[in-house]
Length: 142
Image (cartoon, rainbow, N blue to C red; front, side):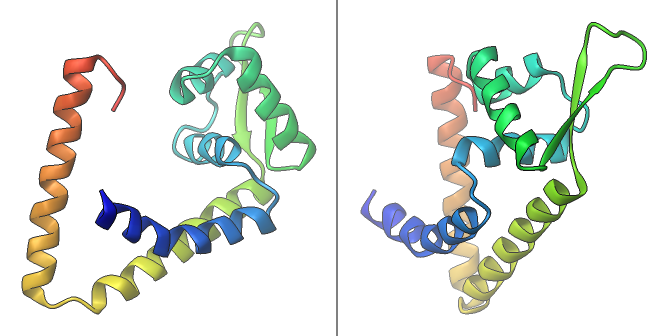
């Protein structure tokens, strides 16, 4: 646990600085990354993915809309549904966060030897498998 916390502690200050400069919370970022992957998601889909109540998801969308990161649009085929998508500004911030994250991770991994990379890969595969098993056993989302 200590090693995991140390690894996260190296990366988190950089991510938190970037989030803070964009005036975004973790919940808002999670929503934006989901919309990046699933443009046009409904409020119900957003709430389900984030494992939060629909009114909470609506509040996140409201704030992101005011910040011009997200826009709402009527569903073309069923006006009862509202679709959500990133604005160009929202797309830009998500793309920048992904790019900076990849750059940082690439620099970190480049400092490892091939043997260290192989060991890390095996360890991460074991961690993901164990997490998936625990999620199945507890019924938690993975």
